[in-house]
Image 1 (spheres, rainbow, N blue to C red):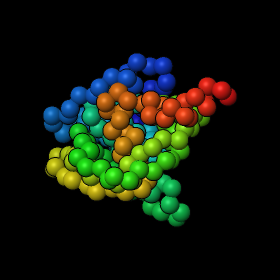
Image 2 (tube, one colour):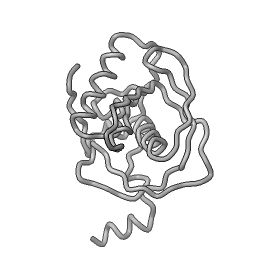
Image 3 (spheres, rainbow, N blue to C red):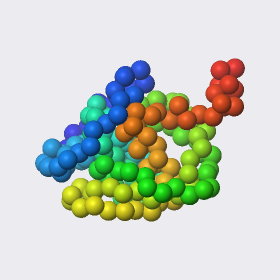
Length: 163
């Protein structure tokens, strides 16, 4: 495993759409391990492949990080696709490893259902709520070239300009 270099704000890669992964091979498995190690190193809850300079549709995350006395529960999703969202939304303060020290209130769906391929190559469906749902939405946005700051609502955007 290796810690990868992060891609930061200003790098055009963050605005690119990532490519589908057609085969779960040794390279993809290694990338997932490197992404998890990088995410843990920088105290992130999630990371998309584009954030380490790879335009592939893969995310990793671990929401156990915020639970007291919890063991690591790493998750790898290949080609994740949100197929259902709740009607309810929540406003949550988000940050991003690619935008150090920047935090904004973002409106996200409270619950989601996501289809993905596991690191074992098997298709799966997962229901997620609360922080896990928020992290999945944030990271899958990265795969479509959407950064969290583009989701700041107009009120907050105007307020931020006044600061």
